[in-house]
Image (cartoon, rainbow, N blue to C red):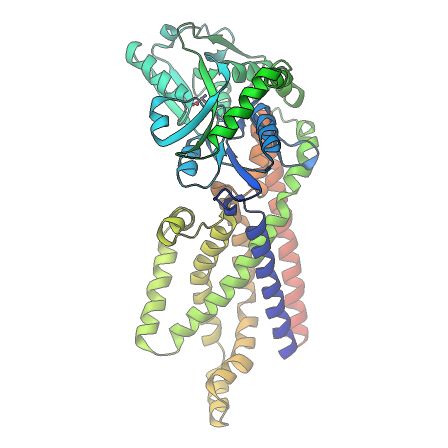
Length: 496
Ligand code: ARG
């Protein structure tokens, strides 16, 4: 029995080391923010082909595009390594303000409002706004949008421009979404009538989706793209120098031709007009399956850590509940009621977004996930464990006490092992729950199974297939868990 416990503790210890390694070393948020360093951290919103998007071919999780090539050249010329992190577009400026990145490239246009909060480089590319709509819908100019639902990406100048149009043209209803592919998908599903998107981006989407067309808004002023920095950054100068060089030498133009003249999306995507009936075609996600599968280890690690830490925390809580010291019992009960009484998703968002503000510690998404799930499942498990312990025959503890066995030793050696056996099925249930709920951490940007599937879907404009495939993976994982748990239970029962 003793050996087993030692083994369990060792496994836990190793697991904690592993998560530290993962979150400590590869977490881009942790890059030093002062300038005597060898790596620059760039933040981008990879939903914007050909500027920046995920290349999911062959299982690599790589962000590529025009901006990325420019950033790489800049970093290399200035003697830095480059690290790329991502966020939705509307999170870029806050990230710079919080010094979570050294610069942002996301086809971002310098506007006077933005310039109040962040600094910009010189402009490296010019674009114009277009109206994207279904072919034949005849939505070509701003006045055609009267009475229509129009989609835009949240936090972009397209959102502002659409608002301006809405002041002149009656009855426009705006719909703001986080990512450009989502906006495009909404047109295809008929939930919105049109979208305002920059020309180079619109072109790619229209090529990949023959049912879409785009028309440049004639009156729209050209909006340039520039690199964004935290206010007062000392990088602006050197970046501008190299950018100017790249302009003069024609490097920028070359990169432009590389990314803007070819049909990059159409090679990976095909058109999927929504027809009635389920026209599923899994062959389209075949090349991306390795990419989705790569989410599995993270999901499993996450579940393992949350279950083991939750078990420890739950045990402590359950002890507080049965130990008979009133204030402690009261505290543990209050804790349980709060964590069982509020949504897990809300707890997750609070831990992730509030921790840096409250403690100054820049918690990574994975750490925030494990912490929240531990706190939450500890609350549930404490009740299960309490029940398991209290179900152990009272006579045993009385016997042990009368033989002079100390309380903690009795708990550890006699009561716990039996209690654990009692609650095994409940623990398996909890683990299954955690495994599936781990999908929630996709909302704060951990690229686990669900998020991988969503990325593939966004890249290829197909939604059902990757999601169904992700569902299948979860199901198989849960089945595997169930079988191994019942095998374990059988063995425990035989060893009785
Ligand atoms: N140029 C526009 C802006 O600055 C849109 C940029 C959107 N970029 C992106 N990666 N989604 O607001």
